[in-house]
Image (cartoon, rainbow, N blue to C red; front, top):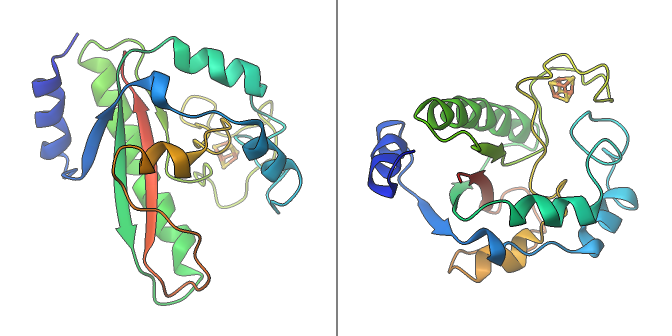
Length: 179
Ligand code: SF4
């Protein structure tokens, strides 16, 4: 198992400078987040990594209790046009999955990534876990795991606001559950 110092060196080697450690017990899981996925998200039922293809809210809470250390990665970004958002987040998520693998191979058997956004590995998602085209690589986002990202990241001093225009700076977050 790696020390914090070793992991931080690995993160920096891969170009991640903006991250904070978090006690997974402080990751806020809430039923309202799931309600927003079911009633209010156009992606509902269209992704193998989003509700209803994910664990229940109770199971999500239990999952976080299995961990003692996690890392939050912060990504700030402005895009020129709304269509650019998908390509940017898909690229960030792909690299984060490589990071999860490297952390796992460094001896951290429980390493598990919650990417910055919904899966996005394929151009078109099959919509179900059963038919997923990358069963090993696909991961649910924090929102899909019923995490109240707003409350969680604000409590550790990170910025996050509801945005009203795509030209505003996005503050996005990924979580790496380490051990
Ligand atoms: S890997 Fe592809 S098919 Fe599987 S959840 Fe992600 S986008 Fe959908």
